Image 1 (cartoon, helix red, strand yellow):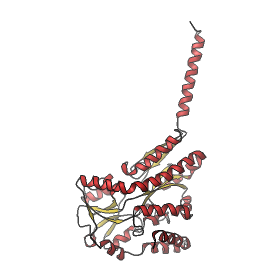
Image 2 (cartoon, one colour):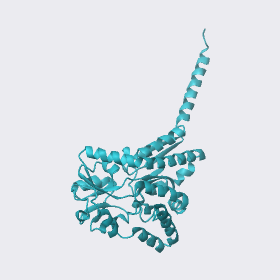
Image 3 (cartoon, rainbow, N blue to C red):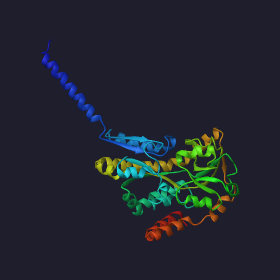
Image 4 (spheres, rainbow, N blue to C red):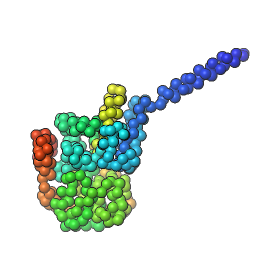
Length: 341
């Protein structure tokens, strides 16, 4: 059987048109750029899982591209970039914005929370109960997705005498924000502001005697190479926020917003459930590579906390001076009730 040439050409044209239509349909409607200050590592797997889940549940309508290690901006720039629409999603460390995130930064005050899990559970409860946290992000034109926990912090350096206050006196220790320097100054140590990406080199060169991050990140950036000894834990706080610029958020259809909200809640819970196991695994990996993890000597943390000022009250006093004393006291009372003191 033969077919007129025009029918063959017509059929070919229809197949081509369908192929083009299929390609157009498969192309993502929303390509979101996510700026991260941390390197790509297993430590941020929950965040990568969040991106993959959003892409899958939206049937490919959303594509999320995460750029790690400050490739789209430094840690102290990412929130502003997201708020302006220069990027879409950002990992925001509240302590990097001490003059902007006046309430969120309180989650990174030392000696308040007893464990990473407790800090994260209080964060989740506070966001639902206290409007000030939502309102503060609104001021910077970003929308909250979820909060990342951090394992407890350790001092890491080449000298193993970091497990006692006398050994820390006079030492240069990595710090950030407005409150963490106070905990070191209280014991005669010297706080030094060093960005996350510069920690390894700072320990290697002696700019820092000790780094100050959690085991997951110590392992991720291999600080145990220039600094064999890690002493702690010395502090439990929350980690960075994951936010999306309001301009981007408002451009998304309601069904995609709902999916991202649901996956953000899942990611926050997954992070809480995974943090303890992840930190243990990081510590084991470090030890296998020659690192030494030393607990603080008995009684040293109690002495440290007694020497430090009441930083939560200092924060309340500062917010009172800003005219926000009522809401700061409300936050502190809520936290104390959750902690039980």
